[in-house]
Length: 201
Ligand SMILES: C[S@@+](CC[C@H](N)C(=O)[O-])C[C@H]1O[C@@H](n2cnc3c(N)ncnc32)[C@H](O)[C@@H]1O
Image 1 (tube, rainbow, N blue to C red):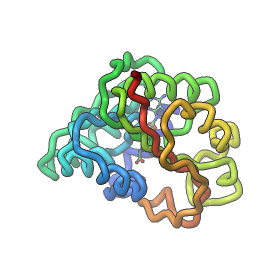
Image 2 (image 1 turned 90 degrees about the vertical axis):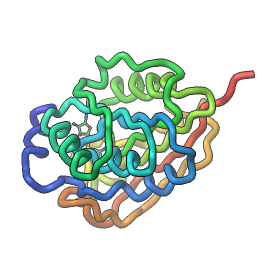
Image 3 (image 1 turned 180 degrees about the vertical axis):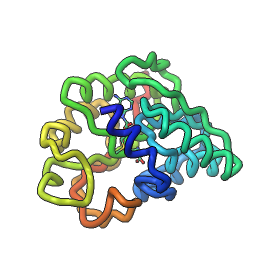
Image 4 (image 1 turned 60 degrees about the vertical axis):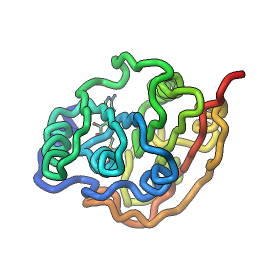
């Protein structure tokens, strides 16, 4: 899969455009800028936009060509991002560290998804916020983007199972009209989530 992403990002164009994902941007603007984690960040559209808002961004992705594009984009925009090339499943996530984390169209097989989502919850501080947008299994019949493998698309039940320990402010199925570069275009079937890690008493 890593080769697939390196090839996709070796094109001059930004695969998902340079503008942030709309849901991510809307929800992030409701929070006070602090430490933000972006796993599977790709070419940096969300990282650069968040850094412009004052967030201290850590972006993770295993694609070297993604990091090169993101770093260049950040430099041109005159912001700093901390972009680490790593396989998410091998990364040592710090615990109770981030004020927010966002998963935007990061799709993994079932075992990896469960494991990673658990690590991401652990990496949030108590009171930290998780923002997510994923393609749902209904996306398989559409050509507006996402994996063409039903096992890599998510159900509401799977997302609920992974994140039900958070205090859920948003948890819904949506049908947005995507306009994100060459690869996310048209009506889509997604799941959106915003949840806060409980402050233990
Ligand atoms: C559909 S792209 C989304 C990129 C970005 N979040 C955005 O919205 O523009 C999914 C990204 O996840 C990354 N990815 C997938 N599996 C990964 C893994 N195991 N470790 C690190 N990165 C991974 C890919 O390289 C790719 O950049």
